[in-house]
Structure formats: C-alpha cells, structure tokens
Image 1 (tube, rainbow, N blue to C red):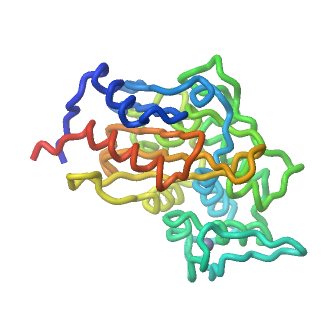
Image 2 (tube, rainbow, N blue to C red):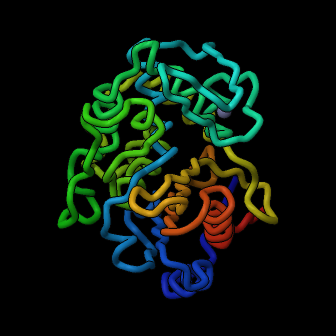
Length: 288
Ligand SMILES: [Zn+2]
C-alpha cells in the first residue's frame, strides 16, 4: 500500500499537543524511512524518567520462553483470573478470566495468567533480562545517550511480577521506542538505527511469530493496519494509580512510523492506544 506523510514537523508537534490534551505524559514518533525521531512532546519527567514497563515486557517474556524452549508456540493454559502459587494468588487483568489462552491470544489480550504459568515451567528473571538486551535496555537509549540505562530487575524481586513487567524502576520511553522500531523492522536493516542491528540475536522465526501476534486493528477511517502492545503498570508508590503505555508501528507489514505513548495516569488500551491510533492515522494517508 502506498502511503505518504501529510504533515510538516511543526504541524506534527501541534497535533501531538492536541492529542495529549494537557495530560501528564509524552509521545515520541520515529520515521523508519528517515531513521530519526520526527516528533516528540511531553513533560520532562515522562520523557527522561525511568518507568515500570508493565505488559510491554510480555513481548520479551514471550521471546525468552520460546528461545529458551520453556514452551513451544502451541502451549496453552486456561485462565480463570486467579493463578495460585504457594500461599500467593496472582490475578490476571480480566475479571472472569480469559479462558483458553495460547501465546498469540496472551499477547493480544495481555493475559497475565499465561505469563505467570511460565515461571514454574522454568522462565527466570535472568532469561527475561537477557532477552531485554535485544532491545538495548541495558544501555542508555541510543536517541538520548545522556539518559540512564534501563534499571532491570534482579533476583530480589518476585519472578511472577518480573515476567509481566512490574519492575521496581524500569526503562525510558526511548528504550520502549527502540523496542517498537526493532519489532517493526528487525528484518529490514535499512530502517534500523545502526546500533540496534547488533542487539538482535534471537531466533528469527520466534521473532516473526511474536510480531504477528502484535497485530492490532485498522487505523481510524482507513484500511491501514497497525501493530503494537499496551501496558498498564501500577505505580509503585501510589496505590491504585496506573501508568498507561502504548507502543507500536504502522503500517503493520510495510512499517513507516514507530510510536510510543506514555501517560503518567491512565490505562494502556483505554487512554494511550487511542492517542497512538490518532497520531499514526494523521501521519499516513491512503493514497489509493
Ligand atoms: Zn488472563
């Protein structure tokens, strides 16, 4: 599908401002063809801070579980919302449970239960941290090298919380953008910032499968499909409050833009994803 950008960079920044509607948070947009960030807007805490990644980490946990042969792609569980282990009950994110879940569905609906079930089977924090290096989380972000490396979990935290991304500290929005760029274009080195090419060391067929499971719907008023992942981590020091993440790219098969949206207060699918959809659809015009 032929697409063309419809907006100047000034226009894009004004559009990002309108999309955020004054909410504390940020949006960063990357052009895969230009290999650079073309728009970023937000407050400095959101843009420069380390944030718990929440369910974005399920991308990494899925890759780790497949690469380390903890399970294969056909593994499935029945999510009834409550995963019991010892004296502890870990909840999924959906009241009645997600029912039968395989990895594709677990990524699509963000089923915690599925990922909890990988821990007793052998998925470790070290494996998740090791695979997060595919996205450069252990280094300062390449677009803002003055910012800190990601603060990844160590074995002092609960592994059930680690595999769903409830990390005590976390990563910057630029680390998340790197993940989106690599997921969008890991097989098209011409779109990747040079530094990231060396990060990717995993099984490529697993990468394809996980990426296919990140397919979302169509952008508003278009036939353009987009991909990505939501996240809604609880804020460690503020009971009941959550951050909202969405990171993704569009068009799904021939990516032109990658995006990250982070809101300090809200839910990934309810609050962050609609902003990303709005921005991506403004950027892409179906010229047919
Ligand atoms: Zn579930």
